[in-house]
Amino acid sequence: MTAQPPHPRPIRFQSLSDADTACAAAADLGVPLLLVSVPGAAASAGAGWFRAVAARAAARHPSVAMTAVLDCADRPGDALGALSAGIGAILFTGRLDVAERLADIAAQHGVRLLTALPDALDLRGVRDPRRACRDWLNGQDGGHVTE
Image (cartoon, rainbow, N blue to C red):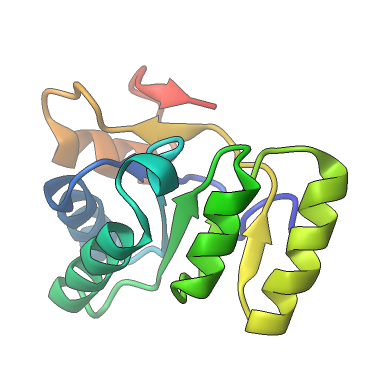
């Protein structure tokens, strides 16, 4: 189980456009990218949608070292579904005892299970997402940060 992700400046996305914008900014800057779905996306959009969006964004920006994380909130069933769907990294924010069991299962599948996330840039409602991503990845906070 990994409490914190490897990249300290994650960007949350809710669409292919958001994911593409974040990847383009990371490519411009030559930095790795931690791309995280909006909270609870495993329940609302599903693992298949997430996998397709992450794959398309990665294909459009092959130079970006991207880690895509599906947010399963505190729903262990969604986390298990993500594991079954072959998602490579998931965020589970539920009870610690459940997280420990999920971490064991995730490890058997070669999946990274995160239980926490540093502050993230949330692209929902951002007027200039490309600039916000560039600023965020450069260490600046443009006021669109979520936990």
